[in-house]
Image 1 (cartoon, one colour):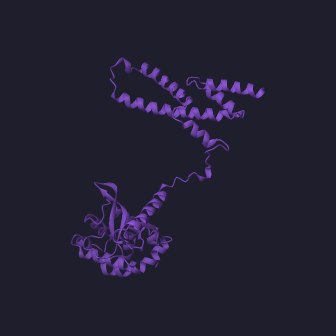
Image 2: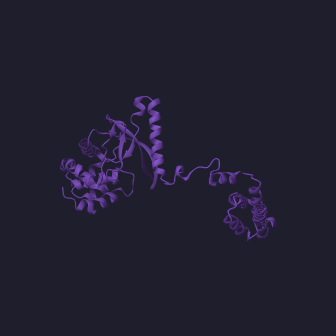
Image 3: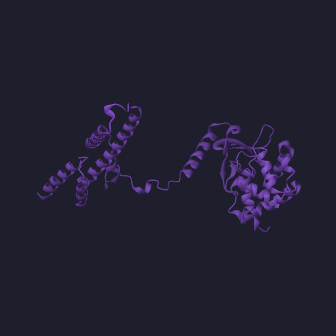
Length: 318
């Protein structure tokens, strides 16, 4: 008998809490929940649905106000005040009648042992969308490899780490850079600084299903390139604004091949001749390289010089 009386009492509290303008409604709902009544969850879900509906109505009203006649008596602040009060109560009534079903979903999710309950352990809570996007891209590439000809799908690329840290990056590439730097008349560390900017210290090296492309300097594969390629997502700057692009890059068999091709690419291209006259001064060299259009990033030279003057390279002893 007492349980029936309690249910009647709590139901009365719930009915009062459904009045959007009753400032004591939520407190009554809180006290009902503390008593252990299972109906409190259902009522709280309805209150949440009412808030959600109210937000939708408010957004709709704002969009409508943009087109409304400001001089109209139906668009006065007093009319808007009573209109908002009406919308609040309308949202509460709609949630109570189960108009959109959001409350039912919330109850199923939060009820203990209820049907449709999803444990929190299976809900993703890391918010790491980059990993999800990468796995999604890899899944798409694998699907493409199954249905597309090998010549079309085999050069699909992605970026992944090729070195554990900066020390391994420098220890591996410095001996390779020495020979090319001597050929160009530039400091080997300057080449490593450029490679570090292009690859994020080797943490974002371009790969294909064949493995590492060894592309250290972001050299694209033009019509004259006869070697392997990798189609990789990249960032290009257009009128100073960064934009995602898909581009075809050169792929090499080794880092030595990549370094040698960089030297040939710079020396054989007439637009870089001005830069080659300043290889003894890395600042002038990279500024001229940028001016000649080597990269679209307006801060490209500054980024390389910042890495070159960092402690990682200045203190490095091969």
